[in-house]
Structures are given as structure tokens and as C-alpha cells.
Amino acid sequence: MSEEQYTSWAERNGFANWALAILWIIGAFVLFQVTANLVGILLILWQQGGVFDPTQIEQLVTENIDLLFIGNSTGQILFLGLATWFFARLHTSSEDRSSFFRFKFHSDTPKKIILTIALIFAIQPFIWLLSWLNAMVPTPEFLSEMQNTQMQMIEDFLKGDHLIWLTLFHVALVPAICEEVLYRGYVLRAFEKSWGIWPAIIVSGLFFGMYHVQPTNLLPLATLGMVFAFITWTSRSIIPAMVAHLVNNGGSVLVGTYYPDSAFAEITPETMPPIEAVIPSLVISGFIVYFMYMQYNKKGNTKRSSYV
Image (cartoon, rainbow, N blue to C red):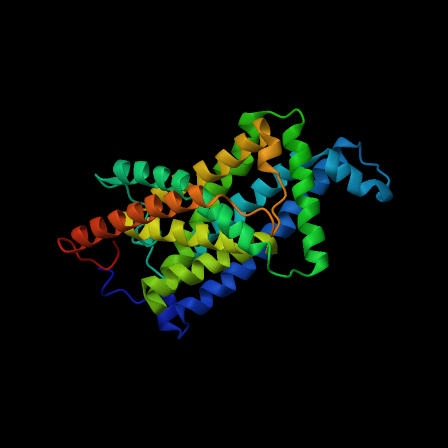
């Protein structure tokens, strides 16, 4: 049966695709967080021989962030990745699930990967500008303190002795696959089926930003989410966005490891990025985005299908 003839479980039972997507965003996030924390705590408990002083839990967590990374990756793989793959069955047939997620490698995918890598490098000064603008937005003190604590733990970890390849696996590779499966694979497509592509790009990007629970980074994270969604749509494949995500996160790990003073410099309303970096960033990024959009339109004129 073709996709045009197939009626999904959601359609047969009167559920809106966008509503199921929001339900799963919340469910996947909760399950991921519970699993990540549980696995991390159990690993710390195991390392301590089953006994530790509850008053020292904060110190133990700080000293064993590598074990928390294992818990985080476990939760992402199980729920953002694998469970999302099965949940998408509510929206599409088993045969078309790969197309639903845009798990495709086209003849022009290598070119799109190169373009997306160039875009990620070019857009960094603009992302810095967005971080600076975000710093001007008032944030509840408890959220700011929570984020500052998390960032301090990561900073201390990257400044210390750690296996760079293992850190890249947990911080770059796993999120690049699992978060893309959830947000640019499932969420983008589900919202697109309900509202069309442009609202889907914007709303999925906003949810991606909120998912990280970093209020002082919401604006740059949401923008990156929209960029990854745009890349996925115009590439007709989720693979370039996965590579872009990998490059972005991997670059942050490398800079944080070898240039920590630059990576963890405090962003305040007084530290505006240099305009001579922001303007070229906008021009080059805008050109790449425009080029990818025109290439997509060119392909769209020669090929139309339910899932592209």
C-alpha cells in the first residue's frame, strides 16, 4: 500500500500529529532524565562499594561526571533514539518509517554535508551574538544557579584529565544521533504533517532549545535547532543535520578542552561580540542558507512525493 493510501493510527483514532508529538517530547524527556540520573547514581554507588555519605552526594557527582555521561548516553539511546523510532509507528506505516525520519542518502548528500559543515563554522559568531542578547533577558535566579552549576561541572571536567575520544562519544556523537532522531526526525515530520514545513521548523527548534533546560542559552539553542531542521528539510535527509550537530558539539568539546579560557568566558551584556565578526557570519551563513533553499526548490520541481 502506498503512503498516499495508508491511514496512520493517529488519523484512524482522531489524534492530531502535533499533539502526539508534544506528548512524546514530554514523555521522552521525563524517561530520559529519570534513566540518566538513575544509571548515573547507580554507577557512583557501585564505584563507592555500595556505601557513601548522602551529605557528600554533590561532591561525588562533581568528581564522577564521567559516570553521569554514561547515564546520559544510556537515557538518550533508549528513549530519544530507540523509543522514538517505535513511537513514530503511530504516524506512519512500518515500510515508510525510514522515509518518515528522512533516513536517506541521496547522490547529493555528500555535497550537502560539506555545505552544512561550512554553515556551522560560519554561523558561530552570530550564535555568539544571540548568546549575548540572551544574557540581557532576566532569568529566575534558581534556574541561573542550576545552569551555572552544570556549566562549572563541565568546565572542571574538560580542564581536568579525561579521554577526549570518550568525551566526544558522550557529548557529540550520541546527541548528534539521538537528539536528531527525536527532533529533526520525528518531531519535525509530525509537526510538518499538521502545520506545514515552516511552522514545523520554528516550533521544533523552540522545543529543542527548551529541552536543554538552559534559559540563558535558549535563544542560540533554539536557533541552532531551527538551522538543523532547515538543513534536514532542504537536504531531504537527516544525515547532514546529524553531521552538523556532531561538528557543533565536538567543536565545543575540543575548544573547551584546549582553550577553556575562551570557551567558558562569561557572557554578559557588556561583552558584545565584535561586529566585524558578526557581519561576515551573517552574510556567509545567509548565502549558504539561500543556496541550499534554491537547490531544494530545484530538486522539488523534478520530484514530488509524499515523503521526500
